[in-house]
Length: 348
Ligand code: DAH
Image (cartoon, rainbow, N blue to C red):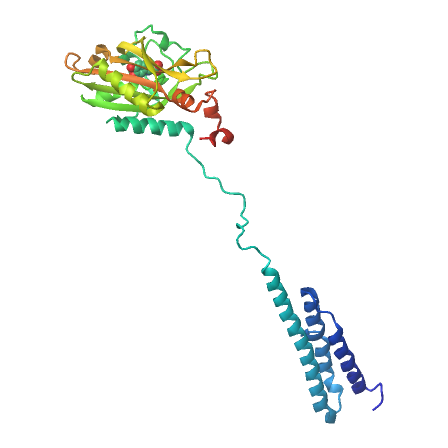
């Protein structure tokens, strides 16, 4: 056999490849993969190529050459297998470095939303009064003059009818008395009494609108909770007892409260109720803050809705919900309640 005959060179190649198989480094994943492709790759692996050259081998040598090539392939395969199992072993060694007691790595936490502080306050107010046996009534935000003013005993020239306070949807004229965005929840007193006969015991939560200069304490819209109780023998003492009980529930048992004489067209007598707001920064250690208006339903109002004012009496009250929320949470500016800044809202 001459040295440059094809079979010789196959033999030489087998030697060379065999040496290369032993000396190739397979210490990491990339080297192992490179090894697999170089020696055992189906398309152009060197061992595969040698098998392709079997046709050059004379017939009588084929059997032996085949065995040698198979052995070579086996050598490459076992080197690959042991490299792979070393890889698995060393990666599971690394796995033991993981501290399984650490908390999982999670994306930024999903923050749950919450009810707006005004909604929370309204819910609390409703819940307290429902506990005292009041049911809840609602009325329209767009009102006619009769319900918003006339039936509530507002004299024709009353200043609250002034264009300054009231948003008119239809200006009053000689033919029509006008259509307004309700300026208070009191018109729903009228609507309830037009529908229902005594005994009546309702609260009316809702939005109201005023054409006022916007400031830290006034906004063009706000919320009220109106209350109305009409029955035989209802007195001012019932009103006082109710409101004391309410204030104790809402502000806490030790709240200080006072009634001040006042005037509303639809109640007689009328009062405003203040609570003592403790504030150590003030010279007196606090101050009186008005929370609601109230009084005995004026007999004219009862007569306007066909309720016999000789037989029935009633009390009514109306409170500002924003004012309640601001007092309870020490919120300094009503506008914060309408800006929807999450940094503010998140606090409640
Ligand atoms: N409606 C009045 C206002 O918006 C508040 C009020 C006062 C309501 C006395 C009442 C009441 O029911 O009796 O200023």
